[in-house]
Length: 456
Image (cartoon, rainbow, N blue to C red):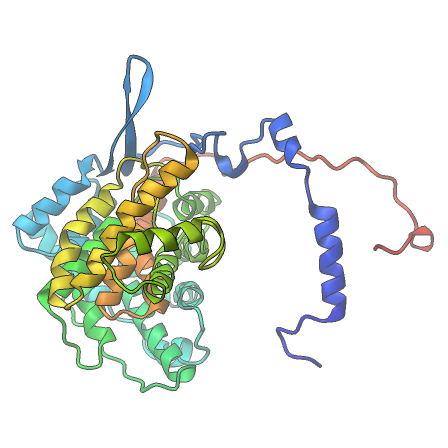
């Protein structure tokens, strides 16, 4: 008996047959006007639903024409930049306030905010023996897989797991918002102990700390962090909490919720979607790309050196040879990503605190030169800008957060948005979401086994 993950000669042969018989002529998609990936030919998402939770805009209309504008992101009708200015002015952490807003549709009063924080602190405790029996028994090399398994296992501890009434689902969602940071950090600690042979330490969350503070508190051996570190991590959570109903993981939440399933299954499905490198892993690619760039230049301020390396990357001669400069461009935003704009204002301060201002200058130079090169390469006037992933990986590295936690941090933030969309789908019930696929395989007659030819 071979190993569980062995690829036998039989499997390799069958895979060749699967590929040969699975390829669909690309011309058929155009012939039948199929919106691949639920997108129009220009990449714009096909309208499949309505929402009041968030809005993403990047164009305005003048004289019947679409005119690009600096991108804007709204949570429940509030401009994200106004929300950020608000909690910075009021000197409190923002993620909890944003979670309350996304879930309920309103900004909390002081009393409501305090009660919500107390609720999160109360729920930030795992069931007895959960760490020992679930997290430590089979540590995963991928923390996102661990999170999916752990969220599904929490179902077993919930006496009302199948109750899809709004009060019960809200309770489950708030519990998951509170617990996902704990699950992610503990899963990383288990991985680090079993697979990296590092010391194991499990710090209990502090109910009096914010989500961002608790992540740093639980992750670091000495539990210490600076106020600026916690504030910038909090900012990252705020900016990743929600991004319209059309992204892959949020749409997954709607699809799975429409089937009538439980909260744990819906959120686990969203986690599985976010794990995909095309969705949640972009900032990891940015960090790896910058490692390559730093190895191949001698001066972070030498724009000619930077331009030469980026040109090779675009020419598919360097880095991962995909021709992509990661962190640049977005499916919706053109002139600018509002999340990147907000982030960049605070990244410089952290780089100064960490003594990494030279790297900050490198990021700024790459952002400028990459936009110039890509625009020239595409031979278009359509602008291109850095997206939120461009700077988030740099922030996480300055916070000494392990790469293994980059995508889980995205999930910790986005579970607030997923929860809001799950509740919205339940409050506005529709038929089960069921897209259509056209069959393009011709009909065939059954052939008895004795008359079949071997597949090649």
